[in-house]
Amino acid sequence: MLLIRNAASSDLLRILDIYNQGIEDRIATLETETKDHSFMNAWFEKHQGRFQVLVAEKNGVVVGWASINPYSTRCAYDGVGDLSVYIHRDYRGQGIGGRLLNELEQIGKENKFYKFVLFTFPFNLLGQGLYRKAGYREVGVFQNQGILDGKFIDVMAMEKLL
Image (tube, rainbow, N blue to C red; front, side, top):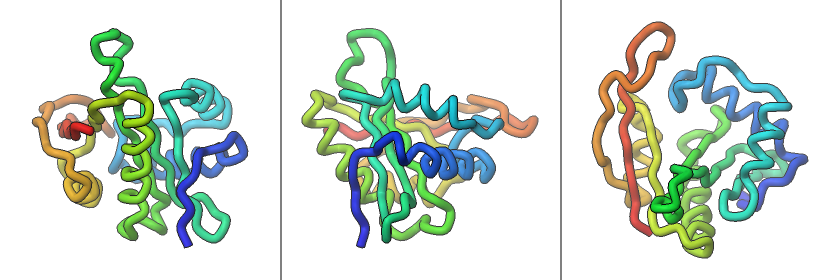
């Protein structure tokens, strides 16, 4: 059985492990250096109140997480949240991301978000499938948005009105 719940500080090591997998696998972020516990603690402190973190737990083990992140510090964008969704590599493609997204959208509505945006790699077809199935649409592609392993990488923007 899959349980979706609010993340607790006791989940941070597992969240860190899953995030570092995303960095190592080069499919979800332009980050290149794995993160440590102090980074994750500081990150978690910023994800309280409206900017929540959820975890997906299967048989008592955290197998994925999702968060609402600030999109911009400008007050005009207070209702726009930026999303992150990371699933442990052994559990990808099993519908866990969809469950996390659905719950995150409900929390977003309760916290006066009217829109979620996210950024993904055009070659991350599994991620795009998740987002499209949940009703996100492609806004466009930023060409040469970043550099990963010495190569320019395009980044696709997607959005959903809540």
